[in-house]
Length: 574
Image (cartoon, rainbow, N blue to C red; front, side):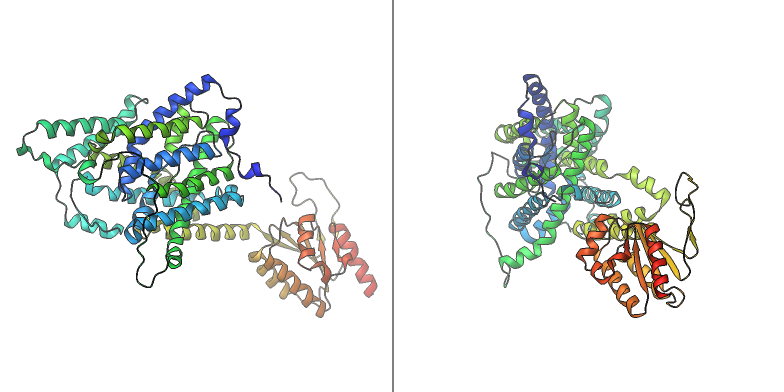
C-alpha cells in the first residue's frame, strides 16, 4: 500500500491558517493565555520532581509546546512535560546522569519520528486499555510516593528510588516540619475546593498564589522563634530561571571500558519506554480532543511532531515531552480551536521565564508537592480499577499486573510485560473465537444464518469429510487443526474438503502446516480440496507456494463446486 506525503506529515497549522479569522484569533489568544497560566505550576513541578529543576520544566513546556503546535497533526493539542514521565526520567538521571537523559530523549524522539514515517500512528492507538490504566495508575502511586519528602518537610537527601525502600526510608526518618505540613495541606485544600467555587481559576494556580504569598509574609514578618526557616522554597534548592539556555551538548562520562555504543544499548529500553509512553499519551489526548471538537487528527503527523520536539528539547536542557490531556482540554474549554492557541501558550511561558524568575523562586516546595499529589489523584483512574475489580476477568489481571510491575519495578518492565500479556490474551481470545467444525453426511446452509431461507441441505458423498474453519487461520488454530487432521483415518475419508469461506487471513505457521498437510496427504493417498478461499487468502496461498502443490481444480470458489469436485474424483477412482 502506498501513502502520500500528506498522510505522513501534514501539520494542522498550515490548513487552519488558510481560513483563519480575527475572531478565531481572539478566541485562540484567550485560550492560549489561560493554558499558559495553567501550565506554569505544572511545568515547574514536573521539572523539579523529575530530578532536574524549574528552568528545565519551563524550557520543555516552551520549546516542546511550540514545536508540537507548529508541526502537530491535531488542531488543539498542547504539548509539554507530563507526570507520566517523572518516574522514568528520575530513574535515568540516577543511573546515567543528565547526559544519559539527553541521549535517551533524543533516541526516543528519533523512534517517534520513525513511527510516524512508518505509518504506525493508528497502530499505537490499539494498545489495550487495561495496560494503559495499569501503568498510569502505577505512575500515579509512584508520583504520590515521591512527594512525601517535600509535603511533610522531612528534609531527606539520598531517598531511595525503589518504591518499597523509599517508604521504609520515610518510616525510619519521619520527622515532620509542621509549618511545611500546614502549607502542604492548605495548598491541597485549595486545589480540591477551588474548582467547586469557580472553573475559571485553576486550583493549582490559586494554591500557588495563596501559598507563596503566605510563605513570603511569614518569612518577612514572623519572629524567628516560630521556626519559619524550615519552610523551603524553590530558590532554596534550585537556581532560579533567567531565560532560555543556549543550546549545548553535555559532556559524556563513560564508565571504564564503556563506549558510546554500549551506552546507547543500555539506554535503548528507556528510550523505547519514553517513545511508547509519549506516543500513547499524545494520541489518546488527540483522540479525546477530536471527540470534543468534532475533528480528526493526523496520528502520523502528531508522532513526527512529538519526535521533533523530543530531539530538539534535550539540547536546551529540557526533558521528554508529549501531548498533555489536561492542558489540551483546558485549551478546548476556553475556545482554542487552532494551533495558534498552543503557540500563544508557549509565548506566555516564555514571558514567565524571562521576567518572573524571582517570583517563581518564592513558590514553597510543599505547595508544589500538593499540586503533584492532585495530579497523581487525577491520573490514578481509581474508579476504573474499582469497576474492573467487580468483574475480575482477564483484563483486570492484566491491569493489576501492569500496575504492580510499574510500582515495584519500573515503567519499562511494566509496559513490556503489560503489552506482552495483552497480546497473549488477544491470541487466546482469537483462538477461542476461531472454531473448527466437521461435517460427514450433510451440511445445513441455514444453521448459521440469522434469517432462515429454507435452503436445500447439501449432501456429502461417502468417503468425504468437510472441515470448516470459522475465523483467522493463524498459528494457534493452525496447530489445533493439524492435530485434528492427523488423527483422522485415511481409509475412511480419502477426500477432505477444507472450507475457508470465513477465514479472513492466514499467517506463515498456517501456511507451513497446510503445506505439510498437503504433502503428507499426498503420500497417504488423501486428496485435499480447498473451498471458499477469498481473494486475499488466495493470493497468500499463491505466494506461499500452496497452489503449486495442488491440482488447481481442487481450489474451489464455494462448497457447491467443492462437493461436485469430490464426486468427480470418486467417479474417476471408481
